[in-house]
Image (spheres, rainbow, N blue to C red):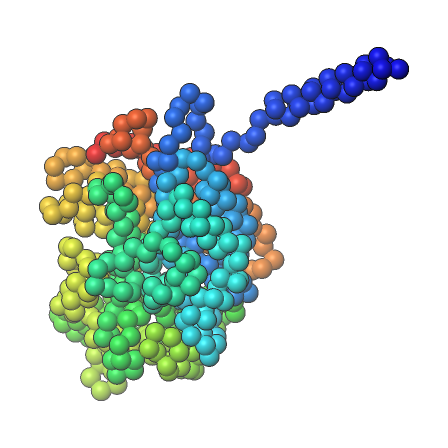
Length: 455
């Protein structure tokens, strides 16, 4: 009897042992950020950059809805990685701009309430981000963008307690350049400070909103939201009234006319609406603005008295001296031409090209790698600085959904946008960095471009 039980026990032990061996042999999925051989030393040395998440306050009209589950999955991969040392969100993480025109942004509450509501609407995303902060293994850095321009540091901290906020000294609002620890020659910023439509505009409308900083791009975004929430067709849309340049030799008038041509183009080809331009439809109650404006308050028009081009809002922005002062307020290093800046607001290559103007061709800068967001145009582009050294510009793209007015059109959002940047040392050489641009294509790290540089 004893022998019988002994044999039964031995048999069970063998079965359990075999089962255990099978489990041991099962390989756990390798984190895609940690694709290294077992012989290599695991070290946290990667910097991951994402931008333009556009996490909205209300998923009924937010710019990022379809991509939220993938963003959550991506952030969980970041959190569980053993080789990432820092995650940088380079602006437009929140979205105080993309709100339909008739919607009261704060709904009678405060900016703090708005932030809290955004966190609730995107709970899974902020759960992972705050988990990263609490783990204290990966540094999480937030750089302000234009869509979260007015967000005060204390309100960002409500969403992500303890997050590292990269803000320029002396400016509590929406500009910041971040140099990751140990890499002073890497500059990460949103890139909107060079954009006429989107850089901070202090004192632009003191008569209407004393102390306001919101630039013309704020109203552009409000109308853009209206254009997609209440869609129409180009044929049925309200047409922009004709404006004539009657004084082409007047520099200010010429700049205003360029501004007008941009508005005409976007209102008839990009964010066309069916609203009456005279109706007060743009509810503000944000950033020191309290009035409800019409589209005509924003658009340039010919004065009925002398035919000059004038506008109710932002009328005083159109001199080179004003643009220079505004650039200084935004901590811009190299002054630019106002007309190029106005026209460049619709040309992503102009904004992307400021990496060369402000850094690589700036004799006072030693930065060799620049990362922007803002234009939503992912790329890696090589430059040469004044010392004939190789430099790299990278744009981190966006995670917003592909927009459509026709809701019957089926779009495979899972293969669109969702880009990110990885900067990491090549092998053991800490001065030689590989810069890689990826797309999170259907949850797969799809390498789109890469380059290396030795600092």
